[in-house]
Image 1: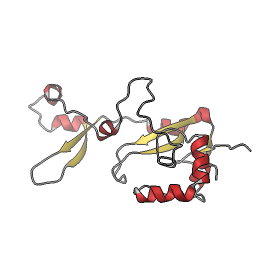
Image 2: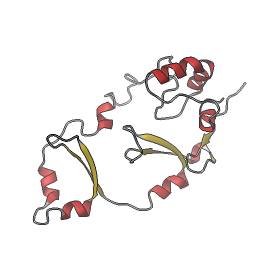
Image 3: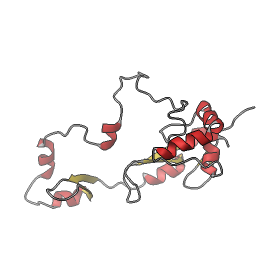
Length: 175
């Protein structure tokens, strides 16, 4: 028996050949609840995201007595906030912040080419967990064979559960 994995565009719902598959990671969006999400799209669909370019400055504002705020502002508007000051020079002189992005802070440190620190998504502890990259045949087989246990673990950790009737999950895990 062979298992065929089909990648389906999150934008158009069309099947995507391996040589036309692109991933788009949405790192910031008003609908996101904390962590980035990944979209499977065709190369042509990915190019539509690149047709216009706006230079943005993203900020975290930490003020006493208020929760941290995230702000994105167009670079030209940022520069115009204090017209008598060269904000580019101020930014260049500013002190560095270690692990400046939440994604960088979460990323494990490994040496180039090292497999140490990599997560085995075919293991009972990680199979079915949302991750970058493609679902391997071994992970898909484990998820299909142990769906109840995988969903119990995912639900307990607050992650989404796998619905074998959902088209994306069918394609991802070969249900």
